[in-house]
Every structure is written in C-alpha cells, then in structure tokens.
Image (cartoon, rainbow, N blue to C red; front, top):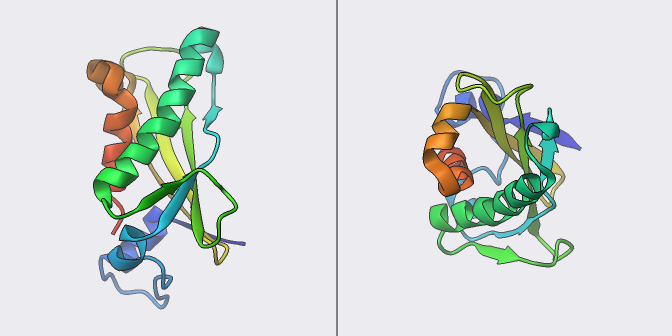
Length: 152
C-alpha cells in the first residue's frame, strides 16, 4: 500500500518542481464523480477529556459531517453505505484530541482516503480548541469543510 500525505501532494498539485508525478486519481474530475464510503471514525489522543455521551456525539458528527463536506465539495459524488462496493474511496475521519481542553490547545482533524488502487492520501489540519468551540454544534462541519477545500 502506498501512502501519500497532502503535504507531499500539495507541492506536486501546485506545480512545484518535483521528480514525482501526482497519482492519476488526484484530480477534480476523478474525485468529483467518485463513490465514497465513510468508515468508522477514529478518536486518538485523550478521549477522556469529554464524557462518554459527548464522545458518542463527536464520533457521530465526524461520520456525518465528513460525508456532508465531501458532498458539498463534490455535489456529484456518491456516499455509499457499502464499504466493499467496487471503485469506492474509503474515508476514515480522524480526530486527535489534546491532553486537556484549553483554549490554546490544538486538535488535529484529518481524513484518510483509501483509493481502490491501494493509494492512500491523508488530508489534515490543526484547529485550536477555541476555534472549534466557537463553531458550536457545527464544529465538525467547519473542520471538514476546511479539509475538503484542500482537495483538487
């Protein structure tokens, strides 16, 4: 399995000098009409900073809002429920929580995209706890909308 990060691909996509070529799937045409299946979200870091009920709500939001962000970015994309459907891009939403909920602490939010050809791309960003808190119930929506803007 090949893994590429957005950071490595962004230099290629933006046309920076590089000996590598971006993978064939990494273009608007391929991604905009693709079928995506959102896998179970992962929470890494310190999940004990919130209650079990809050964590369940966060996990549900990660799944729902990552799929919603993909549809907003690519209106013709299909969000499948069958993760084994042929030619499906499998998306794993991931949240890495800080050690403590302090306004200046950072959370990492990412989407791990597993393509049918075994290529893997990780798109992520860091957000302060304060920034996400200010978004309220739309925090996951906000974060995943920011991530999908990084896609071609």
